[in-house]
Image (cartoon, rainbow, N blue to C red; front, side, top):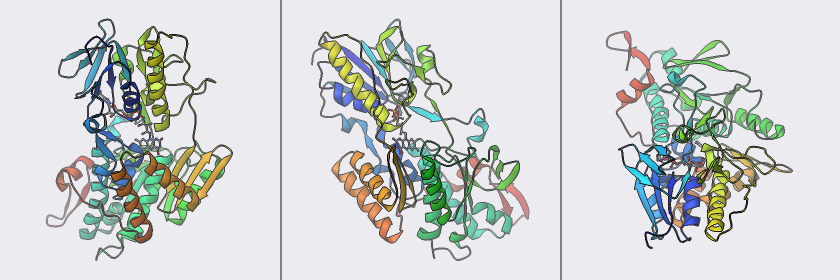
Length: 440
Ligand SMILES: Cc1cc2nc3c(=O)[nH]c(=O)nc-3n(C[C@H](O)[C@H](O)[C@H](O)COP(=O)(O)OP(=O)(O)OC[C@H]3O[C@@H](n4cnc5c(N)ncnc54)[C@H](O)[C@@H]3O)c2cc1C
């Protein structure tokens, strides 16, 4: 590959950036793929790491390995901090500047606390491998602490798990935490009965799974109730602290809060000095390029992508992948001298969410499924989208094992000492020796 071919810089090796790279690598171009992490992450299964069902390496793969067969793709582990559109350069955090002929930005989204960023230390969200293992640690530590706790009120707070946000991630977390407590941990503790743990799912809106049909929401509510999850609907959270939340104006004592309520786009709009929507997503043209800059494309969760009929495309993995493929095809047409108008059109394949290890809902307009059949569909679909035979087999085996035995094996408390984890959560407990209450 010579230096004369166009140089494409791709920022972000998530669903959109990776799909673009793998398709565009077949063209006569040179690609530099930049990501702040060394792995591509399958975010839809992050909640399974957080709830001890899967190990981290089952849902994340080294980016270098995924593109190694393309000699024209160079991978850089680096954080992008800006873009100089006039000079056509990407600015890295360490001051390096990388020139491009075409730039594809696919930097995804992050949690949004609706103006309450101070809640984050108490109510961590789920976006990265580190988030998932930190939540797993908090869940498991809460049971460990409850086992040694003598103060009944504190023990009750330790055994109360609050999830904020009743979308697919909140529903999946709540169902799996309930099963972890009632099935997986059964008989393993002596002073506490993990089955008595309270799992509370809080949603400000009138129903769960707001993007699904109403009968699917009703089914999810019933299925969660069967697992013993308390669902609070129409209940806005007005405060989050180390010792609990305030919901519907009343305090609820808990030491474990998980945020599953909202996301905002990556700060790419700021780098590009571009117009953004309320969620911070860059407003793009119908061909996903930046207005006035046909050499810059923004795709996936960080772009306000539209369908051909003007409705917004959802912030989900298939939309990001379809956008990556579309931009690669667009580039191919441009390289062939065809610069006619291209319009991205998103094709929706349906919405899926699981509720524990045996129930799920699938909503694809007129085709709707619920219960076990939907769960099997969910399982097969996710295994299909994982990368590599080895991981597909490993995940399928883990799920079958959980399905039949209820046992979850990824239960290690790792990363950071107990005191550090609790300190961040601001947990307060009874100090037995001193008889006083103190922050751990
Ligand atoms: C918990 C959870 C569950 C989900 N469940 C589902 C589901 O069931 N089904 C579904 O379809 N979708 C689901 N999604 C949404 C889906 O994961 C996203 O829509 C999808 O990942 C968006 O792809 P993307 O390429 O835009 O961004 P991402 O896949 O998020 O990739 C962005 C990449 O950019 C990198 N990056 C970010 N900033 C920088 C920077 N400054 N410098 C360098 N690199 C940077 C990141 O490290 C990351 O690798 C879920 C998301 C989450 C968080």
